[in-house]
Image (cartoon, rainbow, N blue to C red; front, side):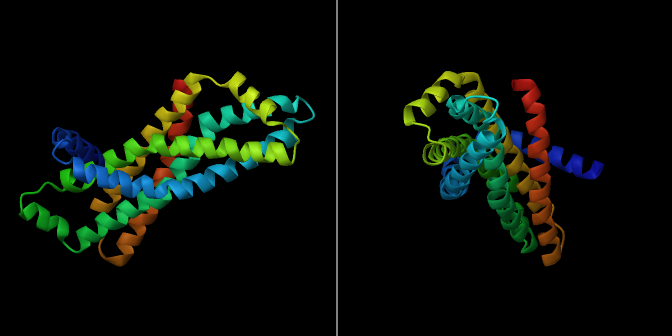
Length: 242
């Protein structure tokens, strides 16, 4: 445990030392933004739409007898904005992108490509880790906004077709309950989650075990550690931000 923490801290230290090369490496950073962010949009849109629809159903079922459904849009949007959008997006991305980072870098280690980079005096952290961490960290807020928008649309679809709420009633409630602090807090969460996912994914790849079994264990560990870190971090960030 202590050895793993020490290795992780050393990786973060190396990464911070590589930040001075951001402008030189902007092409690889942009490519990672496309690979980890743009290509994740369809999945994020799908997850967001169903999440909003489920939240609308649950809110109507649990609170319909206690409060007026005219406030449903605002209440659901607030919960999605602060919690569901950043957390669900991060969990989905950790499974799709974080594990992929581990597999990519782990395969490079097993095939000795990382040793070849060192032989050519190329820093593996700068070449492999920096673009992935920055690319995902920068794209996570955008993905969260996409998830938020589609979640609101999904919630409105359920509210309109099954709960007989009009467009004006639903979105008037959204406007009444909207607070810029909650929106910014959700974006801050998503940015930190993106950093966690990419750091854990790259770390597990660099320190993967030998053979196919070691790579498989590292990939699983990448998702599990990321998911637990996201949920624990969400709790701590909730206390700090809200």
